[in-house]
Length: 316
Image 1 (spheres, rainbow, N blue to C red):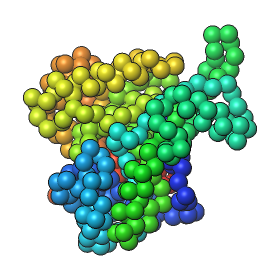
Image 2: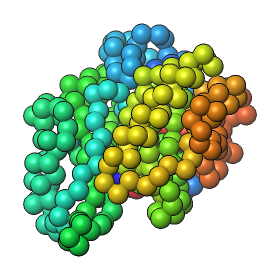
Image 3: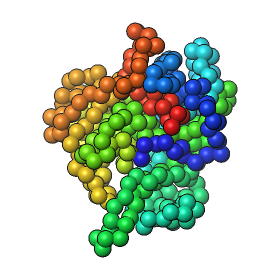
Image 4: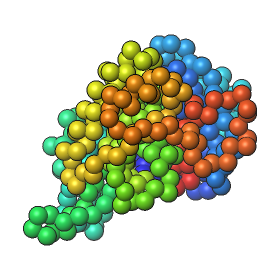
């Protein structure tokens, strides 16, 4: 899943609004915003976020977040239309297999029926979205389709949207940080390659497993990315995530771990993780193939990976 489709919300993306839409990453430690169009960054800004406003990826202090967003977007002169990213334990991503169903309404009903068993969350309390991730055949040769299903607890989404609106912003969509991450870093990757793990070391350590540009599994990790002493815990979380991904239908072996985010600058941490994981590791070019001429030289590009991926989603 490339994250082209949003989590279903009573919010629609206006036509031709991509140029005026900002990808807004509400990281636990900072706010980062990117406006991008035609393969280049037009504007980018970031600011530190006070401790305790965001906790484990969720809004802990809505009033403080609204105030911080209002001050930040006004100072940076950003458009009001924003595409928000989320990553926390109130989100579940699952890959399921279904018979090929062409009718959209029938497919939606089938996905919801299967999701009731696959997702440990009451669906009447969740926002549900899905996207077809590929095709295959059953053991008996019957055509099947692979579907990535995302469920997010509605109260969590509502809290984020309410804070953004209180800041005078207009949320035009919600996307998973993991999908934005893959969209940004796996652009142009062939669909027939092995799987790769993308691990974003920010305020929330975010993991996604993708084949080509399709994100097939995602979860936030509880392991810290703040020091080498935490590498063992983080490596265990990454291994467990890979093990779980490998239990999914038609999973492909993982051949590389790609690190991004501000924590990717910690070479000692990454060396320790590489040794413990036993897999080839690489630090991603933080903004992929985007033209970054508009980015100030004193800005840290590693802050903007998720925000840029969110902005690109608005143009999809």
